[in-house]
Image (tube, rainbow, N blue to C red; front, side):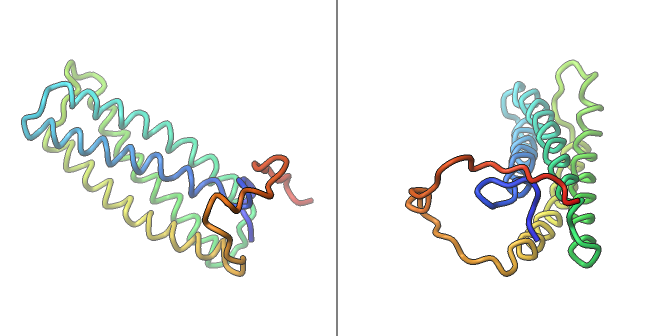
Length: 167
């Protein structure tokens, strides 16, 4: 089974999912630093980093939904649906935090907000495990490829593919 959205034969969603995860972790670190007495602007940076992560999570979710169309209705589909739901739950917790902070004049972090973010990251950790399982299932049976830039020497034409639906 292959993903419908690919770059050089590799599914795009696993590449995209690293952006919201990394931004959510960064937002939490900025908020923790703000709580521990760092400069006040770090709370604002944490807020806007979480907003950027939510945008990235939305784009990742779209790619995940496109890929979900072709997933067979077996264990792989259950894993893919659970993966997307877990990522949505993580993003939802961060969205609640952003909505609460949106009206605040300083947008600084609070203890409750920081705990919510830590719980969201723990939920995201479950998503990471599910994503790793999905990648093993997506790549089952594919041959190992070279992992150096030398593998790109023979590449010609477009490397990004959007495969039309099967009829």
